[in-house]
Length: 222
Image (cartoon, rainbow, N blue to C red; front, side, top):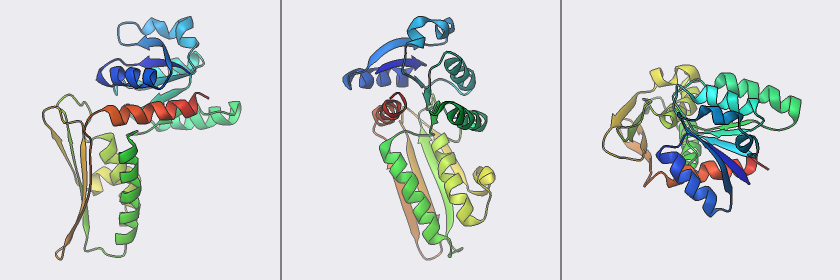
């Protein structure tokens, strides 16, 4: 598979290594200093682009990729992705294929946490004495706060507490901590006077996020 990378920070470098290890070819790397390469033949030859950039540039990056015929796997958080999700559905109906896969976190372990989180919220729905809260810890370079993963966790809990998903980050307390080079720790706590239930995911590095993104790209780029 031919892969284009959009964003070449720490995540971009790790994605490059994992993609090559899995037998793929990196045909183009776009960062803030060579945006004109979106129009290059190298970029247009890609089967899929993997985008990890910044909240301020993600939307434009995806639209430029689409304009050049390349579908995108995006893991950038901290921006409103709903408009492009809707456009993706329209394009899917028109072309018969998906043009965007976006997740707040591609880690296999985190996606298991998402499912456990929803199931736990469902089981505790009849018991209002339990109060949910979320804590997320990340490295000091992370631009968005709270993290996209924490927002997803809150949004998945929200309907079981009688709150609309859009107001989840207000209705469900989220504590965001930025320290050192922590890859990412997410903890969901349900507290009552009688006991406390905790589920947690601790990332040991960025490799898990990168691997998940490459796996999604393999599905999208077929």
